[in-house]
Amino acid sequence: MFKFIRKQIHNHLVERKIRRTRLVTKDGHCNIKFGTTEYHSHFAFLMDFWTTFVEIRWCFVIFLFAAAFTGSWFIFGLLWYSLAKNNGDLDVLQNSSESQRMKCIDNINSLTTAFLYSLETQTTIGYGGRALTGHCPGTVALLIIQSLMGAIINCFMCGLILAKISLPKRRAKTVTYSEIAVICLWKGSLCLQIRVANLRKSLLIGSHIYGKLLRTTISPEGETIILDQVNIDFLVDAGKDNLFFVCPLALYHVIDKSSPFSEMAADTLQQQDFELVVFLDGTAESTSSSCQVRTSYLPREIKWGYNFLPVISRTKGGKYCVDLSNFSKTEPVVTPHCACCFNNKHNKELILHRHECEGIDNLGFDVIDLRDAVDVTEKSD
Image (cartoon, rainbow, N blue to C red; front, side):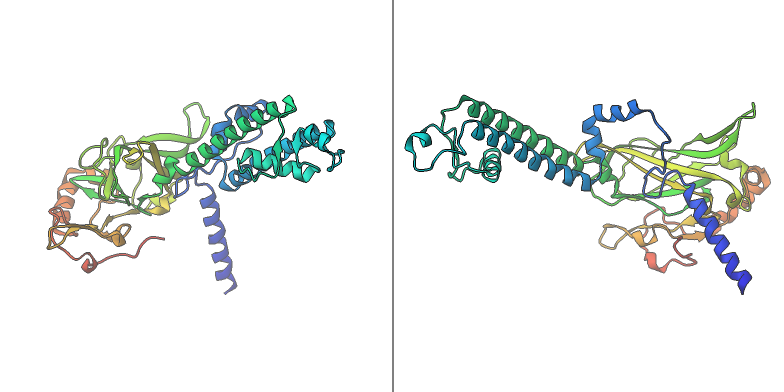
C-alpha cells in the first residue's frame, strides 16, 4: 500500500514537472519569464506607455482611472487653495462688502472647499455655491489649464478602456481547438489531425494556419539548442490560406519523409520530448482587427491510431447541424505503426484496404444521429 501511494505521488510530481515545461498553455498564453534586464529596458516600456497601459491588468487600469481623476482634483484643489490664501480670501470678514468684492473665489474658506471647487470645475458640475469673481487674472489662467487637463485625462482614460475592451485576443476566446490531436490515415496519407472551431457566426477573414514543433536538439557542432523550432505545415481540404471558417475544421499535417513525426512510432510517441504549437491568424469580420489563436500539444495529448468523430450533420429540414459534444471525442481506427511501415508498398495497400472497410465517415453530410456513434472513447482529460 505504501509503495502504491509513493508511486502515485511520484507520478503526480512528474506530471506537474511536465506541465511546467509547456511554453504555450492550452488557452494560448506564453509561459516565459525574462531574467535580469538592464535599467534602460524598463525605460523603454515607459517610452511606449500606451502599449504598456493597454497590456496591464484590469485591476491596475481601474486603480489608474481612480488615481488619475482623484489626483488631478486634489492637485488643482491645492492650487485653488493657494491662490485664495495668497489673495487673503481666507482672512476677510464675511460682513465686509468691500472685501467680499475683491475676493478671487467666492465661498472658499478651507482646503475642503477648495477641493470641492476643483472637482466641480473639472467635472463641470457647477452647483453655484463657489465661483470665480473675475478680479484675479491668475484664477482665469488656472481655470483654463484645469479644463484642458481634465479633457486630456478624459480622452486618455476613455481610449484606454475602449482599447482594452476591443482587444483582438478577446475575439480569440471564441475560437477553440480540440483538447487532443490524433494520428491516423486521411485520404491515403498518414496524417496528424487537429480540430478547430469558430464559436461565432461571424467569420475570420484571411485565416492562415501553421505550426511549430519545439524541442531540444544538439547541433552538429555539439551545441545544445533549447526550444529549437521546426516548421509544421497544416492543411485543410481547401488549402491552408483564406479558409471558409464557418464550421469546425480538421487541420491535418501529412507525415512524410520531411516531417519530424516520421521518426516516431506508436510505441515511442509518448517517450518523446517536444511541444507542438499551433497558430491560427485571421481578421475579425465585425471589427477588422487581426487576431491570433494559439494552443499547444504535448506527446501525452496526441493519440496514435484514433480519428475524430463527425460533428457536422444535416437535419431532415435541410439545415446543417454542428454537435460540439463530439468535438474532442475519438474512435480507434486502423493505423500503421509508424511512417516507415506505411511507406512500404505492400503494407500500404493492405492498410488502405482495411481502412476503407472500417471506421465512421460522413463525407456526404448524411442525416445521422451523432449520439448513436459506436465505439466512442471518452473525452480526453
